[in-house]
Image 1 (cartoon, rainbow, N blue to C red):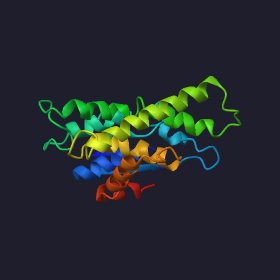
Image 2 (image 1 turned 120 degrees about the vertical axis):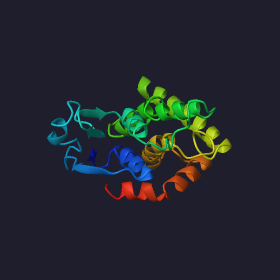
Image 3 (image 1 turned 30 degrees about the vertical axis):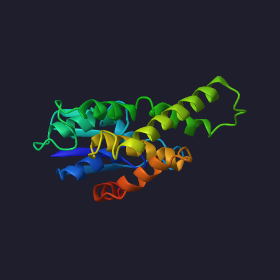
Image 4 (image 1 turned 90 degrees about the horizontal axis):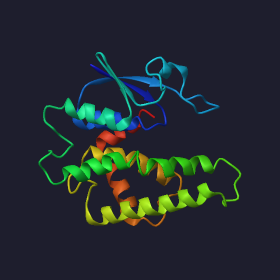
Length: 202
């Protein structure tokens, strides 16, 4: 059985959510962040050298990185759910948004969080760059969701799972103000039963 090493308050919630959507059996090992530093505990480094979550273990396979883990799990699903077929026109939209979450969007969202932890005069080159990227990325997302119900088109997919978790982080840090389509989308997908089950683990 597949084992998920889950870190509280982390993006490993994506993996739990996907498994719940697929109703795929798994076991979970919980790891808790250090109460003072908020860093991952040494127990994760015993599983993978990067000491990051998510990490899955399936027999001899030990895998980290959200996108890779998601694709691995989808490949185990005999019903080929939550991912458009390679022959479908939505496939490449799915692929773009699956990678956009941790590629284009991940850097400015996480950088913004860390920058708020510092005393800054907001005149450094990083401030302008991150502000530009946030404006560009969230305008792109808002435009997409004004035209489609979900990121890959009109059907919920694993790309939505990847995107929702980073959007949730962005929302909690005040980055979605005025993005009405994005906020409505977030409200919709976070009411899914599988999301709520995954979120219950912290």
